[in-house]
Image (cartoon, rainbow, N blue to C red; front, side, top):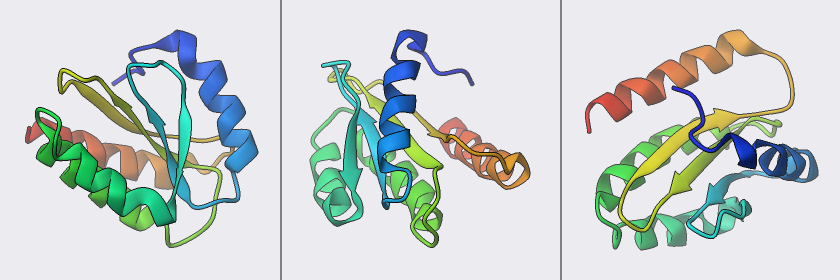
Amino acid sequence: MAFPVPALLPLIEDLLFEVQWLEGLILVTDSQSPAFVSKSQVENLLLRLCKYPNGKIVSQCLKKSINKRFTSKCSYKPVLLLHSNGRFWLGIMGLGHGKSKLTKEVSHLNRCLKLT
């Protein structure tokens, strides 16, 4: 599944470069401006997500995807594109290589999203 807003990719890549050694995720809302959410802020984000349409589903998928990401610091981060109408895209983006492990994680996310 391709990223739905290709114009944002350079902004996300710049942010990934800046935060590559930090633990967290990238969030893009209707403002179309990517923001870094640190590990310490994730629980609050998950609670806020439940207020959105389909929020519980998004929260569950995101929680599953970030649990593994926080076990090691790396440049790959979960990316959540969230619209106020409840539509969302969840994936993993990064700067480095190591596609075999990443491919497994992306496949897992795709299976989670098919359940919704």
